[in-house]
Length: 448
Image (cartoon, rainbow, N blue to C red; front, side):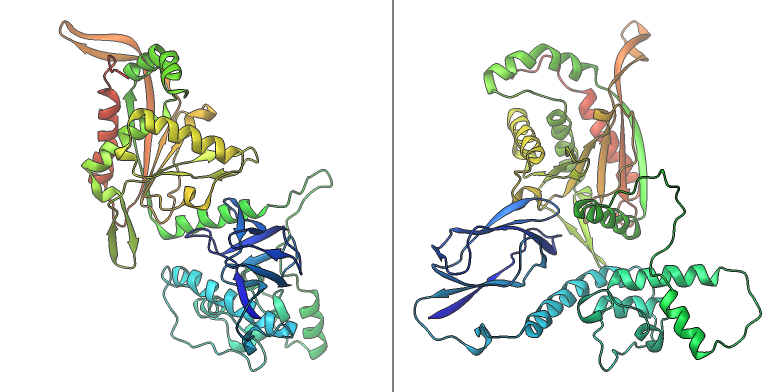
């Protein structure tokens, strides 16, 4: 018999871990190639994981509801033929498995640390690992940036495996240290050994926030935590600038009201304003391709495909961004079908990993909440995001052959947040104005 390792797969470019929801197969069960073994969940989607080979489930390494880093071995499948290699020996101790998990976690944190270290000057002082304690590259990087000595690092309580100091441990320690440094100065007396011991035991790694007995405390779910981290990272990464225009979308509103019944009969889809906005965005991106880029170090990567993500609110209150691939090649009917399909599957938690990958630009409709405008945060690694507000009837000046008139028009604010590292005001403002021009030039006699 030979052993095959089942690896936790990477379910997207920004996914670093997944939660095991359910084991469909148990130890000793036979499994066919491509047959589902377990169900997992990420912050984006739920997925079934198939078997890469036919065989028998020999060992399951993680229990249900465990959060596992991508690239980690989660099960062993015994197959016919071959010899069991020492690395695949199922008599390996739990310590070996924990070391393998720590190595994977360290690799993941190393990737994250590259972004962190690029945002702040690197302190040249080297932080060496203690003799008996493991420190991940990310923790070492933070220690360098904050000037934490090795002795100070060794004293930080760790909540990770084997007492390992995690990113959250060192961040909590820094917050606590900052609070202490901001306290009023008192006469300095050297602490005794007993005092130091008591202080280290009584020090809390978390910051205390005053609350009354009537306050309700709600724990963030994993998706909300990851969204929060992603938003903070985006603001740290990109200097945000936001430009605004107001567009007259009367022709679009009148056209949709006129054809929506016929459109649904002919295509079997309800047409909303979103695909019409996406059509205008795709045209404007073709006119200004330097909006459709990402940044890597000192390089600008120009994306040839126009893949537009649409921010979609979930019933849980969280947000997800499914992506319409090659949006500039789709007709209005095709965009409508794609928009409706992705929105319905997002709300039903049925999106696939590929549905949320490879976006190059994002559109968010804050008008669905009754808001007239917004200043959205860029969806990294993209460099721009468009927000469209609520459409409202307003008096506006209309130019006619008989002179200017004041008329009731359907008006909408559009706001574009962009990364000022690579998108200057001329490019960002011109691109946004071009979107408005396409919206205002919409043909009210357009055929389906």
